[in-house]
Amino acid sequence: MKRWLICVSVLAVVLILVVAGCSPAPEEPAPVTPTPAPEEPTPAPEEPAQPEEIYLQFYSPAPVRSGAYKAIVAMGEMLNEKRPGITAAWKSYAVPQSFNDAVGGIDSMDPELKKNSFAWSMASFDFSMARDGAGPADHNYVNKHPGLMWIGTVESQAWGLVTYDPDIKTFKDLAGKTIGGTAPGGSPPTVLNAILKAAGVLDQVTYKGGGPPDFGKWMQSGEIDALNYGQAVEDEDGVWHTPPMPMGMILGRQTYWVELTQETIDKVNADPTVGFDISSVTIPEGAIFLPPSPLHDPENPTVNPPMDATVLKWNNALTAWDTTDEELVYDLLKFFAVDNVEEWSEAMGSLQSPELLAGRGYQGLTEDMIHPGALRFYQEQGVEINLEQ
Image (tube, rainbow, N blue to C red; front, side, top):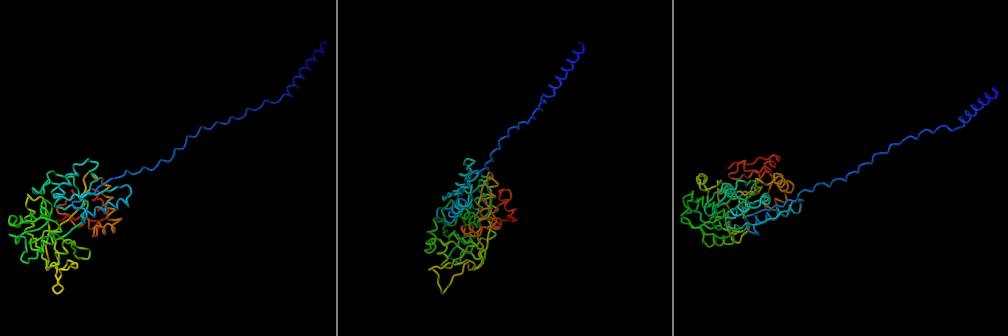
């Protein structure tokens, strides 16, 4: 019995081992693959910032259809055609005391409009009077405009009195004479009065005001003894040219220029009531080109001037404001005087290089009156600004 129990026990153990050996091995757990984090969306490329559109306006004291007015039209059209981001307009202030109105009008504008408003062809005399709030009663700048800034001298010309009378040699010889010229209140009569006063004959002359269509007729008929409208500009070859109206008609006869002496210049500049300085330029004998005229006598050709003529130096500039953006002024000078200098010069009727814009001079100009954008432009061009009187 005991042996039987032992056998049964052994058999049970064997069966257990067999069953265990036949059972499949436990499966290895499947490796866990980490779930990737969701990718952040790639931002769309930013659109390049568009420069803000700039609106600017040129003001001229000259009437519509005049050479000076055509100049600002040409400048505006060049910008509108070739300079993206700038829209230019232009306006004439052709009235007596024109810059008195224009400067005061611009200075009283909304600041955003004023800062992009440019006065074109501004005479140095007006620039000084406008900044200081000075001038005679009929051409007085009531308010000071110290924010007015010089950008470049766009024109330098000889200006003076012309006459058919060889005995009128200096301003002192005008006592008892009649002088013709533009209407009182503008810059030419204002400067003339300062010179006549310095010469001591202001209260001894008669003044007749009108316009260019009148001047030739007055000279030819003898209604006036001298004309305050003689103009001449020197080109790069040293030849002097005059505007065809009215100088072409006037210069058909032998014409003389009234000399502006240094003594008279010094008296004008020493007079505290004048409000501006003057200087002179000399036209060499025979240097003026004389266009064909029916008044020329082929057997007695005229020479102009018949001798060296020392007359008033009249400089005109483009001006802006101390609030005008420095980059805009720099960009305008580069656009006109470098990138498009040939086209601009042709439109202006004279060369407009950086050297000339800075080198022509501007009576009364000091460095603090130069716009920072202009100062940077001329420095980068390696050009020195002429601050001599």
